Length: 388
Image (cartoon, rainbow, N blue to C red; front, side, top):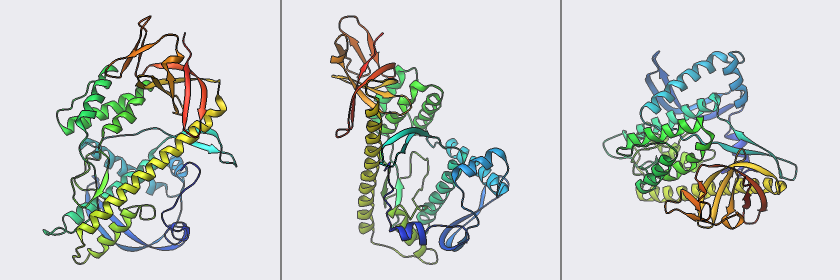
């Protein structure tokens, strides 16, 4: 949530007993990897450990050290970053999809009212952690999947192939913006989506493609039946690295620990029921987070009624167009009845044409809008085009 964290575990556990703190010994479960000088994994080990933390870093501190090449533990951090870059490069070469979307964040006053916004930028410090978490998650899943010829029920994080109907609609939209996609094989789909990402990084108007592309994807979920993870291009994947904030990881730790020295099989039907429950709760939490951000976007825009903003047409309906405001990424509706003429929406919902002048509005068009109203209860913003 924008204004609060809702921990899964009691605070005494999440921030105290189960959290790594400088100069304290903590009981941990570790995934340990040994690399050769060509970044190949030559040895891996999972087990119970004790960690004595020497230093707690903020992401900004690590990023500063990586950029300047000096500071505490600079040699260790630089080496870890080199390994992370190699892991990332190999992952994308193998077909992983780089869905990197902008995330808006808010600074709040004492009453919780948004007074400023900024876009969260993920740099090497964030990606370093991500790459090593992916490595651990993937390796644990592979270990459990290959444990023995007889299957040990485990909780996998799976991601199915995209919905082809949605993907074909998206490809038609991308074609309107000058981007051709290949949809003949899963690998070519991933390659095409990565090309969309690259072009969106270079062209502000193409960024609206990213959330639409994500909606063509299947939802990742938990299951005891492993089908792999399409988006990451992993044959095996699980969630293991965040037991403080994800219950799936708690279960993963229990099963892995029980199966390190022997084989312990659980009731698969019971595990699958837990997978469905966890997946449902995850979707609810993600929706609550989205609604929280939407609320703060509307609350921020409420202070700017009458002001003008640059935006991009991000959606179309029979009654009007959606416009996403640049920067804050707040989306609002511009009704056709607020325009100087009526418009007819084309069947593909990518263009609308003025009945009197033939003027065309299309997805991705840069426009200027004025804020007319901001309804907090409905989390809706009403705008009008500032027509030239």
